Image (cartoon, rainbow, N blue to C red; front, side):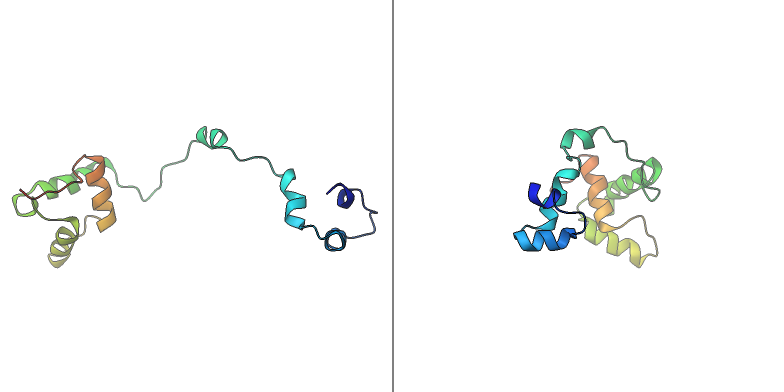
Length: 109
């Protein structure tokens, strides 16, 4: 690597790397800052604008507590509600909300 870095300025990097059989990617890799889990942990991400608010999440949980849906999986509840012309969220969203509420388990008696 040092040979490539100490090359004559007139010699292009790709030619020096090819002559020495060195990857250009490995030449540039040390220049990039290390990405550690600790550096990512301090980031604060803005919530997604498409995220459901608390009332919409509660509506999903309340829908699953209705007597007709007590023992139904989210796929069947989703299909039934779509048949009635009502959309409260995707199947994956229903599973996610149920998991957050601690209700993502076997629902049948």
